[in-house]
Image (cartoon, rainbow, N blue to C red; front, side, top):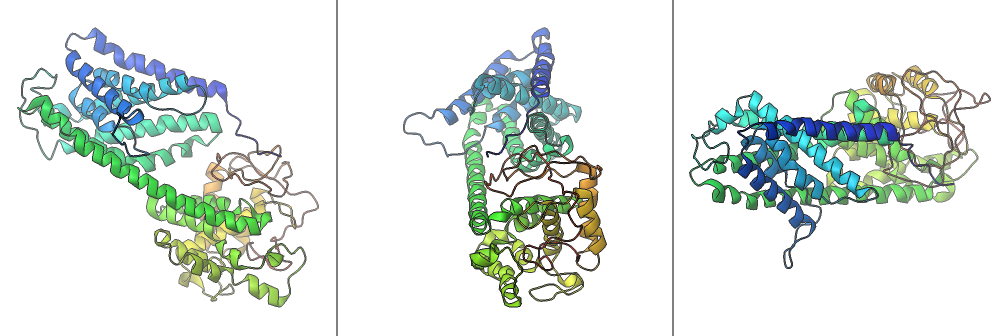
Length: 502
């Protein structure tokens, strides 16, 4: 059976697009009503932004544009610094509409991109003026009249420029979040965080390049000097494209390792992705910075990579394990640590792979570490691992409802799990609910909202077709009335992936 795509809400999706388009009309209307709109500068900047986008999409013969290079937002941000808000919104329209799109409804996607960028430019220009940015930049030549203005007031000019770049990024992320919430039923409070954290630093760098272009535009050298900024601008975009390619290579490495594990252990397909998702929720609740949160998420995804070194017959054995077989299974954290030792970008994730089966009372493995001796990422992953083991249906056990699994984690806090990590997961799920990535062939899954009780839910089938990276949407299988409330054990005893005892 094929995994169901997320159920979009067309009415909400169209409402978001329509409201954004109407906001563009309202934002740009003053430019046509006002007599002082610098139309030559508007036209030139709009043409320049459009040209940069067209060169990226359809490069001239003999010119190679780096693959994966993003939009030339520095040109648009230069317009934000040079023009009134309504005029800056107009500059965004041609280039935004010309951007490459994939999939169906290309015209609607182009309209969305243009409207989204126009609203962001209008907001950023308003923030720039609110902090007296034009005066700090030197307002004499503000309208593109060719009259040089006074020297820019540095370093104060950096403050309104940074605020404008941040506002630009925030509006783009918020609008993207609204689309994700409407199209993929993601929680509104969390849908915008990913786009914001990924794009904030690049947009600040683009804002700096745009500020440089605006300062040169208003200098005695005028437009020719401003155009020279296009070269470092292109280089900055190339650097970010390189960064994204490197990040994509990292993700491909992680995906390959996960798929290798899942080929051996067919009953835990999707388990790594969900553990990574729960680990990220705990890390976010603990206030970890973005870099460390990503490390913890990767650790959750790869925590069982050492199972590649475990004989397949043991991983797929339905009955209880013998003591010798259990000792072989318990080697998988060390196998995993050795496998990823040479992968430099994993960093602190390696310690979580090695120690995620340690317990705070010292009864875990492989080294029997206790309390603070266990690395923080390992303590996070241990809780996330046990939570997913209890809330997933496998060949040997039915899934428990989320509240029952959380109660079991709380019961074992202080003995098997770090109470701080357990409390963080309970609070995160209580606020945002648990929306696991859909990776199994599950029918009629239901989303369990935050704070809900056990209640009825559909039964899930064992995972059969992984679909990693799919929308974070969907639901939870629940246990039947015959299910005993105990920690699941894939091998007949205490569960290495589970919570407490029987």
